[in-house]
Each structure stands twice: as structure tokens, then as C-alpha cells.
Image (cartoon, rainbow, N blue to C red; front, side):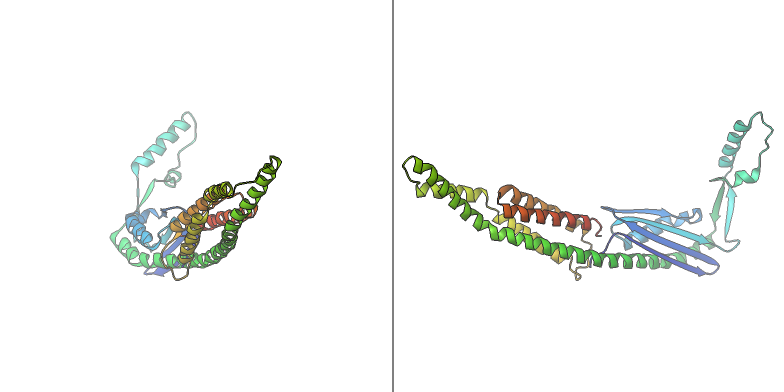
Length: 293
């Protein structure tokens, strides 16, 4: 089943004097990229959180935010003397020669001055609860991505049908194009040679038609394009459970390449119109595939 790379999930847990809230959101990305926003008190758990998130999500730009509140006495705070001294020195330099006094409480609220020092009891309590909350948030995210993926699958299936209809026109016109060229060539040669009192040679006409047929033969490209479409349909099938975004993107590129070759080989107006429809469908496919996991 297709999954979108866009989604959001959230979960909360309040137990043992702790409250944990987790939010996970994701958007398009060619690869997996994660950004964690954790309270400073949870920084020792960053590696565990990152590993758990990577196990649940395989592609997309993912942002995970954790907010936690602990009961009194579980966490403590310390002053970073070096950071505080740096702020004070800067303030003294800026206020030199003025009568303004320093307010220590204002300095304590500046970024980096107060450092939370979680105790073992706090980390053990968080570690026991956090994985379940992260999984619940990821479940909600993946459910949303699956719902959007189902809509993407329906859209891609419709584009595939449009492409097949246009490709059928190309396949049907291929022999007609050669026959039409043969007739036009014969008429032109007969017209030119009649002025000279001569007639066209059947062998010459057949040779020219054979050269034209070989130069404009698109049967191989049509077969390859049909094969790519068959594989495309299998990949977007609801029964396919693996992430297929990169494969679909590759197939769309290959289908575009085959359609460009068809356009360059065949100058028939009906084929050209059909190729425009094919390329339009492929471009729309590429836009939709860019959001498939």
C-alpha cells in the first residue's frame, strides 16, 4: 500500500508525576532526515529516540518534538558559571560609565545560564514511558500517511490509464504511418517522373520505404513503455507493502525517456498528439510520485 511522506501524529502520557507529549510531523524528502527537539533534560536519551524514530519511518524529512514536565525534586538546575560570567562581562562593558545597576535574576533567565541536571530517577521514569508515547505518535503519523497514500494511489492509477489510452493510439498508428509514407512517396515520384516521361521503379520505392520504416520504427520503445507501465501498476497496487517512492520516480524518468524517443522518431501528427498526452500524464505522475514514501 502506498504511503505519503506528509503526515502528523501526536500522543501524550501522564503517569507517576510525569507528563510527556510527543509530536511527529513529516514532509517530502528524497531520503530520510530527522530533526529532534528535546528538552535539555532529555538530551541523554537523544540517541535512543533517534534510533526508535528511524525504525518506524523510512523516508521523508521528519521532525519530532518532545515536551515533558516532572514532579518537584525529580530534576534540579545548576548555574553555568562560565556562561553567566560572559553575560556579565558583556553587560559591564555596555553599561560602563552609566548608573544602571545589574539585576542578577535577569541574567539567570538568559539562554544557557541555567542547566537542568536530570537525576537517575527522572531519566529512568522517562525511559520507561517515552518509547510507548513515541510509538503512539508514529502510529498516528503513519495512519495519516496511509490515508493520503491511498488517495495518491488512486490518482496515479488514473494517470496510468490515461497513458495507456494514448499509448494505444501510438501503437495503432505505427503501421499506418509507414503505409501512408509509401503512398505519398509513390505519388510524388510518379508526379515528378511523369514530367520526364518515365515511371517509378518498384524496387526504388520499396528501398525508400524500408529506410523510412527502419528510421521511424518505434515498436521497441512502445513495448518498453508498456512494460514500465505494467511494473508501475504492480508497485501502486494496495497489495504491495514495501516503500516504492524511489522506484516509481525511476520508472517515471524511464517512461519520459521512451516517450521522448518516440516523439523524435515519428513525425505523424496523430502520434505527436498522443505523445503530448503521454508526456503530460508522466509529468503529473512525477509530481505525485515525489510525495510517495
